[in-house]
Length: 191
Image (cartoon, rainbow, N blue to C red; front, side, top):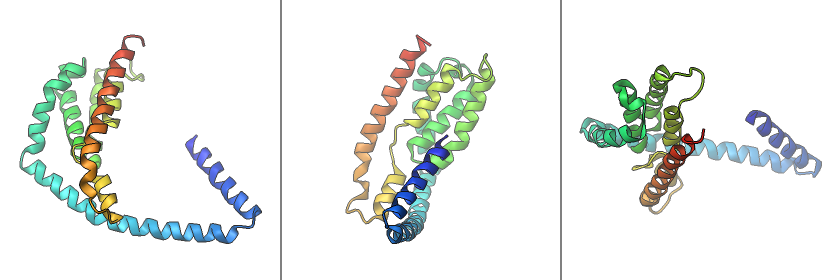
């Protein structure tokens, strides 16, 4: 459905631009946006490699394992069925830990594994369980200790202090995660 919405918006934008005599402006905008996109991506590649390296050091030093141990008791409280299964809880812990460290790409396989493990435990196949829904919300609104993508984008655009976003990101993502968990727990009582 979203593909149709994007197509209609782009098509109508081009059509209105052509009908109003702004065809040249449309061409320039397309070329300039393509050029700036390629420049941004090339700039981000190096920065993302740096952050992936930092996160790899955190992983090798045992920091992510310590964070996972810290999270395990908290997650056992909020996940009812998954907390009883070590495979499911382990995948959940690793996904959330990777997300907290800003490793979205590394978190994806753990997220898929966590959903598979929770589906294995699910009594109603084909319907998301409460734990699966809670995990999806928590995964989407995960607390970000190191928002590496945002820092990289800010650095690519020559921000004076790209790391300034860390504290606001921690506060906002914590608020979002806590709100999401509370709403899930509240709605589980009624649905």
